[in-house]
Length: 304
Image (cartoon, rainbow, N blue to C red):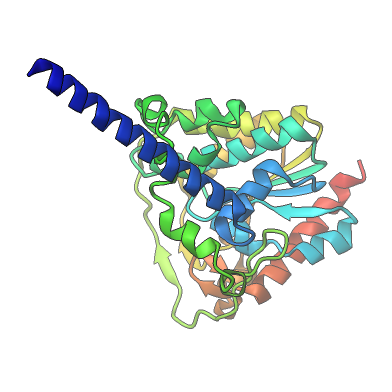
């Protein structure tokens, strides 16, 4: 009886192992086979780009920086590594992988501010799971997701389990039409027509020291690599008062000796809703204007 139980256990374990290996390797193959969409842009950012001018950030980075404007005014090659729904750990990971391969000349971190405790920043590190095995330099970042990541990542399926639908879409021909990008930039074309929101009293929140350390580490690494570094808080269509995120960005940027420019309350954008696709993102028309302002603003620094 005991022998039969052991044999059955071994058979089940072997079956699970084989299925996990086969399905996981298939998902990995098709993940890295994608040639458009969010997975492709992340893979290109981590494994391939050699652009002199890099943008780091989340969805505002993706939609607010028009490549042609920067290439024309700086003469540098350009790539936008922004990925929607990510935080400072993802951006630190991208930069870490990039610096292992080469040294960019200019780095803009478009930082919306997510220093608070208790949000889903750590859960969003799932975007980096496919890179854990091949990128030893990123493992400590991925392991911030949970205390069990090392064990979970023994599975071949786990790194892709939350991304199956996107892997399927990313391998379909219509995906290139559905989500076109230009060197990582994804343009938005509708206009926001509703009234502006106003948040007068932003609540205080607990601060996550690990996020602040990651923010500081990113700036330090970029500077040590010889890059010109700029921290930018790009426009939103919402009137807000001062908050802890901005204060921390100012303090840490000043301590590191890099410019921090806050455009979130710039009236050029707040007074013109037609420059936005939604309250959090500029449309292409707004992005063209914003890109011109930023490229002109950094020009004097590039001559030093």
